[in-house]
Image 1 (cartoon, rainbow, N blue to C red):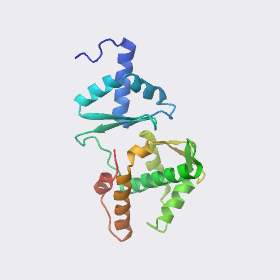
Image 2: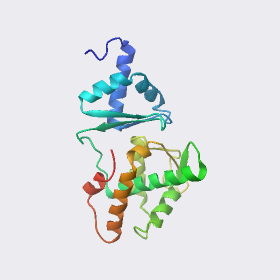
Image 3: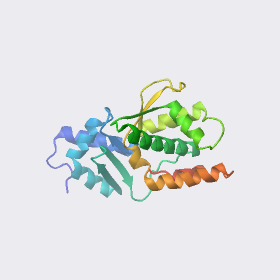
Length: 204
């Protein structure tokens, strides 16, 4: 089967570009202005993407309600290995997303660094806040994977705003919340989970 049969040269070039982006970022989000056109291109070329990616061992998950495309490797390759605190911050973002959605019923969920630190302290993991370097690195990592967007450049200020995309629902599923919560509970009791364990408790 010729995957490109009937496709214009422009669409073929676009297909290659979007495939590479999808493989490097895992998520394509409709609400993200930099990936919005890619999202609609995938929908238009859905069968071609699904066939091509299936050959490579990937499943293309499209949730039109959330406006999110996720690439999942069926062989568990190419998973992102998160550090412990990356996993904790990602879990907090997921919790804040749920809380804001219930409270405000808004289409865009916006939090700030102060919200994240406050939630972290409420979990009583440690008495001190997450250090700024750890927080900064984690947020920039999640931005790369289109889970969040940073509205303010200065991440050293508590009022720095962050948009949490609907892709967080697919990156951290209900079963992941339970596993990471259990991991945090052990950590609070003095256990120190490895980065590998933290990675296993977060979806790619």
